[in-house]
Structures are given as structure tokens and as C-alpha cells.
Length: 230
Image 1 (tube, rainbow, N blue to C red):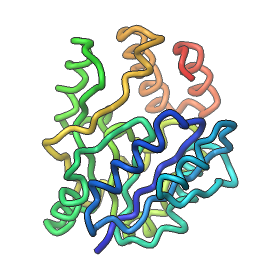
Image 2: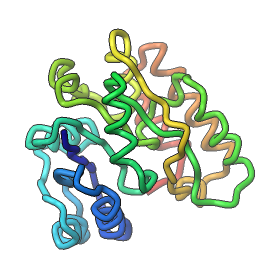
Image 3: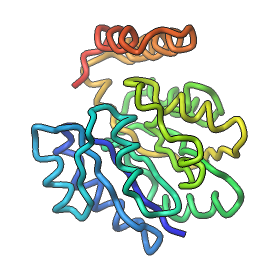
């Protein structure tokens, strides 16, 4: 079995080269390929990704769900591993995933750790060990077997926000979900321009809106109004 890493990007030039080289070094012989699926960056993201050793493709549609689906459509590994461009999984990620799959897990994620000394973010990191709805986002990375991903139809490409929450909620109903005891190292860049409390309130509001059946447009609008981010 082998792993295809799929990274959706948009203007990630500062991060992408380091991430790809790190994933290649840590992937051993289990890493089949890294596919960077770009949403139309105006910086050097795609060129840097290809230079670092990834396969670069441009999605027909911008949006994380559409980009991840597009990247998965050309992936050849038996396991898909979705990684955000500003997140570093543990160096043991490939072995961890293979072990989990061999134990019968069909999908899963890591806990959280943040690239920051902010003490409040330690609360977020601690809470990520619990199996909650809020823990099913993509920051902690997500592995899923190719068979399950294809059977499920992948991510809902109509979603512009909450796509990973929706996917995990849907496919976990009849499949085993693994939460590793190790953390993925997540960028704290959202917290550089927004306070911890503002970020938490934004997350809380969007989750409530999602569960209440709010439209994608209204959730994106509310999120953008609450946070000054990229």
C-alpha cells in the first residue's frame, strides 16, 4: 500500500516548499506522490511546489472541497492524505497511517499543536484529543482510504466552508475513525491578526450556523466579517 498526499493551495508560496520537502523526507518508501492542487494562486505557489518535488495541478474550481476532489481524481495511492499547506504532520505520519489502516481504521486525524507560545492555544490543543464535532476540521490533517473516499463520493464540492466537517460526519457513520495521540503542528497565523477570543467566537458561530442549516454564502460572509485573515 502507498500514500498519496493531497494539498489544496491558494497563495501559499511562503510555506509550500518546506512542507513538500518535509513530507518527502518523512514519507520513506510509503509515500507514492504529493499532489498540490491549486486554486489559481497569483504568487509562485505552483512553481515552487513542482520544484520541491510535487505534482502540481490547477483545479477547475477554486474552493478547498473542489480542489481536494480534483487532486484525488489523479491520485494513484491506496490511501489519500489531505494536508493543509500551513500544517506539519509528525515525521512518522506515513508509518502511523499505515499502522492505523492495517488495524482496520478507514480514516482519521491527529491531535493539534500550535506554532505559538500563546497559552490559550494550549486549551485548543488539549481539547483536540477528544472526539468532538469541532475536532473534525482539516487543520489536524485527514487520511482516508481510496476505496472509502470513492465510495462516499468525496467532499461535497458545493461547500465553500465546513467541507471536512461534513465529510467526516457523513462517512464515519459506518466506518472506523482514528485519532492519533500525536499532534500535527498547525500554523497560528489566524491568531496573529485576530485575538484568541475572536477566533473562538467565529468558530462557534459558524458551527451553530452550519448545524442550523444556514446557507454557505451566509456562513462565508459571517466568517469573513468576524476575522481579518488572508
